[in-house]
Image (cartoon, rainbow, N blue to C red):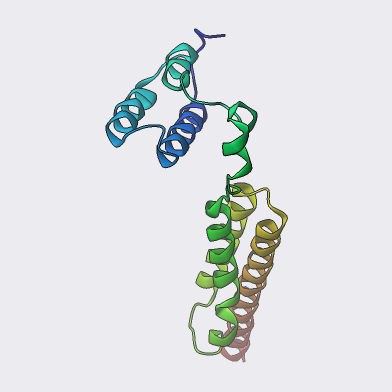
Length: 160
């Protein structure tokens, strides 16, 4: 398996481990910079494994004193996307009567909602992303209905 080619996801996982090690003070900035360049250039698992061989791989590899004082790692990417989805999915509501094209903010809620649901496995992040997705979907649906209503009214007036 060591000579199999790696994917971008594998490289990103090693980058996350290197970033965590640098944040803990296990790597200097120069070491992190050097290893990061090698990680992005790596073609096989063997090359990636060599970059993190001297780093603890899991929580159980850490000394017990250090393990007890570690704070939990929070993935803010999923939370940020979920909050953007909620903002995009809800911002159209008070602005709907004043915007010519309110579906744009609804579409933002839909897109960020989908990305937010994929980015985080945390239940709260996923729930917020779903709220943004639903709010954005309602915004887009109302805009389409609004446009259809005016198109029918225009067609009715032009026929008569």
